Image (cartoon, rainbow, N blue to C red; front, side, top):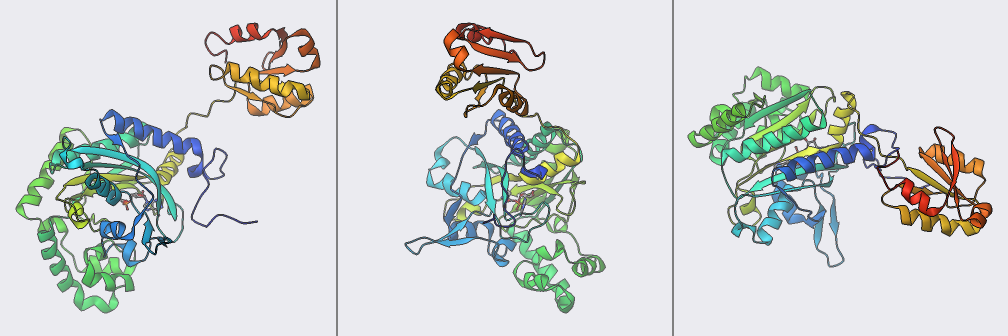
Length: 428
Ligand code: HAM
């Protein structure tokens, strides 16, 4: 029997593991959609594959996604090289430019949700195909948009019922600030290059900031021993003022956050604001989401200058957090009426009657003719409120036998009577 690729998951109501239960998934996406639409953002769906160039230039050549070859690369029949999206931001910026959204009233605020692909080693909370809710505000470089993005992200988590949240805010500065910081880091780490992990040795020249957020204990020890100054200490005047504005706005909005000078983020496109939201109870992979500003991304994709800020929320991680906090998800409604054909001619009658009652009443039918006892068992399994029997006797009398499952009360009703029974509020 063929199986799914490890690190990919089927999402359906009865899935054994909580993060892959479809009602949980839907609860998260619907809540996010309500919050974001309520804030005036518009939904966009971009393709899950793009020319590799868009995706590579998007995340940056020194990002883990490119360096560690985490991108799924495909070739189409014309020999063009494509990739499965490892994040949606670059695609959304590409779409903004391609559809001339720069002439719309700015900022343009877009959101999406869907599958994301990264060839990472699988563990709890880390998958090869996972899902994100993503929000982007494009076309205006104002710290108010950064504060709003953080506020919206936090509101999504809170509306879902999550409590143990930690918002960590940092700034990765302007590109000039980062040049100075990277030079400082290189000089600091070079004498210790031999002791660094292999990954960090590669990062030393390409993107030394990533050493700071290395998972290797040895690297962490070196970072601690060297008493590395944080990026925040290297901010220029403009990026410092911007960062302070974001902090002030968040305080005004009453959003709890801590300034975390060590926030680095794994993608190259960030400038100035960068943040992550963590959850104490979901284990090592504790980031429920992250975001930041990326004012140079559009130009990297060959477009005009389009400042932007946004965030991505890991849907499966949020589901794990919901489970940890014991937050109950509204269950899917079960059918009100289960209509059981008792013989072959009743099959189409059951379907026609079901269709005439739907969607006012949620009706499921028994498809294959079966005995009343078996039909009753099925109706109970489905959690129905009523079971209706249609057989030869019912046909002769022009009625349906309707049984209320809880009280056991049973009566014969003509189709019109059945309709009027369900006319008022759902009898459930
Ligand atoms: P990111 O931090 O790479 O940011 O991903 C956002 C979130 O996706 C993470 O915080 C985590 O919850 C989830 N995530 C990442 N990798 C995995 C994985 N392998 N398995 C399960 N969940 C995962 C971005 O992707 C940026 N595009 C966010 C952004 C939007 N920045 C600006 N706009």
